[in-house]
Structures are given as C-alpha cells and as structure tokens.
Image: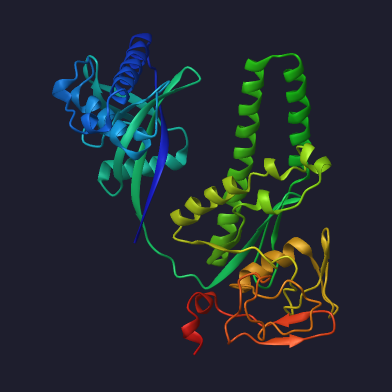
Length: 406
C-alpha cells in the first residue's frame, strides 16, 4: 500500500457577513503574530509558548503560528503579507447531517460548525472516507479567494499497488503537447496548435495593457492565462491516466529538468510567446501526471532525454529528424513524436558517443568526454556502420549497477 497525500478544496456554504468578517480578523491577527515572531531570533522563537503570547486567537491556532515560524520555510521568511489561519488535525471535526457536510473548528467566538459544499462529485467518496476513518485528515487552512472563503484540507489515503504488465511512453512538446503510445499499437496525440494561437493572443493583449500602463488589469490577465493553461494540463493528464489504466501500464517520460538552458532557440522564436520554450508548461503536466497516476496505483518513471527522438523505435539505429518526420537509414519512417514515445516505452536508457562520424568504437573509448553518460557498460554491443552506429538496448538498473553485467 502506498500513502498518497493531496489537498482538497472545500467551499463554505451560505457564509454570512458576520462570519466572513470574523475570518478576516483571524487572518489579520494570525499575520500580526507571525511577523512579531519573525522579528525575534530563532532561538527565542523555539522557546516560545502560547502562554507568552497575548492574542484573541485560541492557543491551538497560535501554536500553529509558532510551529510555522520555526520551520525551515519560516526561517527563510522576512515578513508575511498574509498568513492564512491553519488548524491542525486535532482541532477540527467533520460531521454530516442529511446530505449536508459541515466542519467545526475554533474561532474568535469559540468553536463554530460551518457547512461546506462538495464542489465536485468525485470529492464525495473522500468526505465519506474521512467520516469512516479510511482516509486520514491533516491540517487545513482558511483561505480567501475572490471574496469567498475556502478550507484547503490535506488528506492522506492508502492506495494499493498495481502490478503493471508494460509501459507507455509519453513525449512532451509544443507542436504536440503530449504523445502517449505503447511499444506496439496506436497512440494518443494532444495537439498544441490552438495553444500556440491563444498564447500569441495573450501576448498581444499583454503588450497593449503594458503600453496603457494598466498594471492591475495586466496582473489579472496573467492569472487568467495561468488558469487556462492549468485547466488544459489537467484535461490532458486525466486522459493519459485513463489510457494508462486501459493498458495496465506505467508511464515513462523524459527528464526535461534544465531544458530551457540547454536547448538552443533563436531570438525570433524566443520573442514569440507561442514558440518560446520559457512559456512551455511541461513541469505542470508532469506534476499532474505524477499524483494522478499515484492515485491509481501506477508509477511515473523519468528517463534521460538524449537520443529519444533521434533513434528509430523499430531497429534502434540513429536516423534523421525533420520536424514531424523521422527517417531511419534502414528505410523505416515514423512520426517523430510517436517514435520518441515508443522509444520511451521500450528503452530504459540510451548511451552512445555524440560524434557519430568518428571511426573509434564507443567501447574502445577511454576518458570519454563527449558522451551522454560516459563509457557504457560491457554488456552493450556496438555495430559500426558507414555513417551511423547501431545500439543495442540495456537495462537501466544494470547501467546504475555495472557489476550486474558481470
């Protein structure tokens, strides 16, 4: 069983003006105490107790502020603009009366029980699990968003592990936001042309707001673009997870960490919001895939990116890629993104010399400086061709532990 922790968003229902003002006062008082504690040395903060702090907040809430300011995150903070009120798992209680759920916790006027709204049907089993005790609840925070109050509740649930039979490769890009495919068979394409078009529209409108010096509207516009792209990544990740469930397979992706610094891009493409890799939200899609697969008992596996798009998924020979076309010297043709996803689904690692025109064999190289991973293990065979080198595949665990090949 794997323990999965996530945060659910619960909206308070029919919150009157009196309670909304009380939440505002609690947040202001919480922020004031936190900033006062930050002005003291860390040694004094660690020795601080709720009895030494005069506040209208209950001691359970003040104690959470002390814990927060002494945590690694709090020690790096100089001052808070707003610090939401946090209630630990021992000081709140979830109850149900009829079809209405409510949560009770300490406030300025004693303990209050406030009804909450189930925003989506898929949260219903989560709340039922909290009542039955099969799902463990953590702390929650009171957060105001667009003049409405929410409870951001942390939960931990046990998810059984699934024994997978195969793997799916997922290649991320900009022309195709994602292409997921098994080793053999059909794959799924998620086109990115409409995303590019809308990115350029957001860029054009952003320039107009900057020239007009409407900075408040500009800030709202940037948030709107982030929400829109976040919704697209949620949709794509859900469909990929359903595809992985139907195949009973884990998902393998490229490790693209630091790709913005290593991938070359012209100034013209960099200035175009639709083509710029700095606007490419590949990590957001990776995060959503990770936790959604974990909820289904599946895994997200990261593999090095070199040669996933340049190697033929049929014979393993390095070929030539021209935009969406991949041509192999042995006569195989593939869609370049589909070819990369199939490589990821069947190969656990790639290793070859970058200078493929050199006659020296990879196995005979010593002190290799221009290789992807250095000298490959002895179990890897190379076959020298006229203009390319054919690579055999090897197990990634053997690469990490070369002694296994002996």
